[in-house]
Amino acid sequence: MKQTILSIFFMLCTSLYASAQGEIEMATGLRSSGKIWVVVLVLLLIFLGVAAYLFMLDKRISKLEKNTKK
Image 1: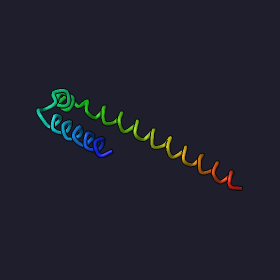
Image 2 (image 1 turned 180 degrees about the vertical axis):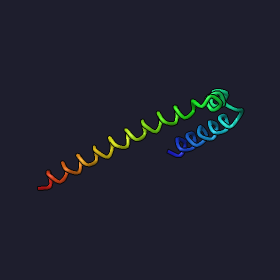
Image 3 (image 1 turned 60 degrees about the vertical axis):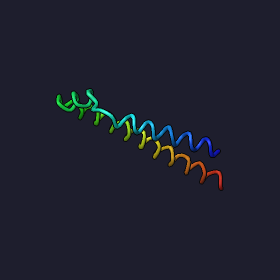
């Protein structure tokens, strides 16, 4: 267990170090052309859709739990 936690920790550290190097050319291009807002909007819509789905699913599960207790 301890070895697994340490290996995950080291993987996270190396990925953070690798991502901190250099500037991302695609993001700069998207920012300069204004298309970054399209990406942000799509990600926001996906997040809101998943959040709404989880909220509705929670309501259905709560209703089923209430019905099984009776």
